[in-house]
Length: 192
Image: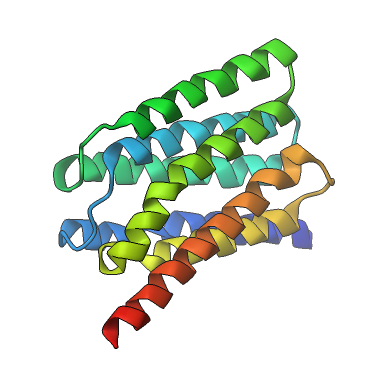
């Protein structure tokens, strides 16, 4: 086992452990996941994982499949204690998921699928960032820290420099660590 294999293991373990505090907070009703968003993220990460896997970018694929497992777990748990509202942004994101698949199949390009997923994921992240800013105590920062660090390990595990190997892990690392910073920063500001 070389160092890149260890990075894949660290990435996977961090991402699979990441939802533990989030799940605990959902059960306590301190965190209220938006169910549709988590289902959307499940599909987006499955597309990203499958696109990376089709291009033999195993570290990115394993990271994304781990994220998909985390997302579907939170979505299912949120079905009981979460926010089940469905709005225009959710419809837009679901249309985007279909578009990402069509683009991948039309151009036979996993890179196009991953770029589409990142754009759609970012759009879906905006309400989470807004919620994190407005009500940081209703979010669980540890989840975003752990998945962000897990994504950094997946980046280090890449064996090639390509969109299918690096784009999604880099995006997830940046997006999740920024989300964590917003949650933590806003909690400190609102505490004063």
